[in-house]
Image 1 (spheres, rainbow, N blue to C red):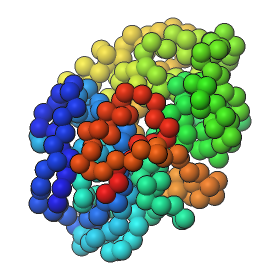
Image 2: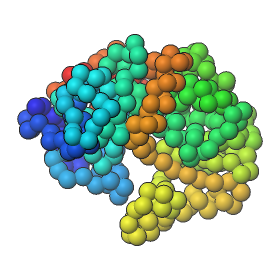
Image 3: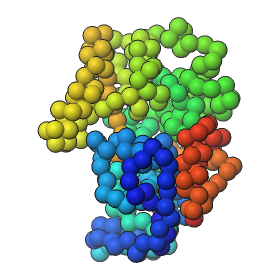
Image 4: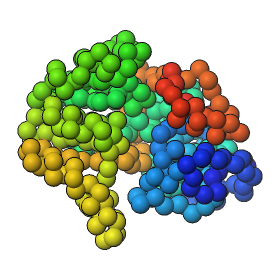
Length: 333
């Protein structure tokens, strides 16, 4: 089979299309023939080695964190899925590899593709859908009626996070570029702030929770609009001690991440607020809940008109990293 791989961590996007043996499957694995795989900022973080303190990989490495496809065969302990089923998944961070013709996925990460959803669209749902669901329900523990601000929410994360927030009974405010304003409002955002025309920290206050999709440069502003006792959850800034503890990391990693996140923890505590950091976790049971929301609310993430093929994986990652594509970047197999 063909797979898009890197030979080493590098800031240069150097992808090699290699021929590999078919993946071997264990008793709990499902072999999936990939039909489409979505490209995410996480792919670039992985190939540059930016997250190796959290997850280091042996080389060569097949990239790709989410996909949709057809079950080819199943392991001995798999009872829910069978050959021919249409499935999708966000792959476990320790066992990625969606940019390939076939991938072996643990059954507990899989869910059935939403009804009336093509493979290209389905492949764009799992990672951002699970990120949003885990952010709202686990990290923020947001309650119906509360307000969540998503900074930098005009991209693919916001497109899934907004309708999921509304399905959970939350009020959601998004900051982003003008181009995405009409679309985000049309899918449920209660308020949209164009960052080029208005500073959100000058017009907002006492927000229950904040999700940061921008990074460290916005930390002080995000903290300033958060109410006392609220949580600021970052997808970009820095992992911290709590993140390390909750993920069962080694003593060294706990010490290292505690040091990295300490400045943000201190600043938040000083104001009576809490700082958190997260990476998405593969979870088929939660993905089923996301699937039901997608079906009931007819959520359909936009797909970039420029669709790539497996041999163009490097171009797809560059396309995502160099600008603001009009929809999720997807590789069609």
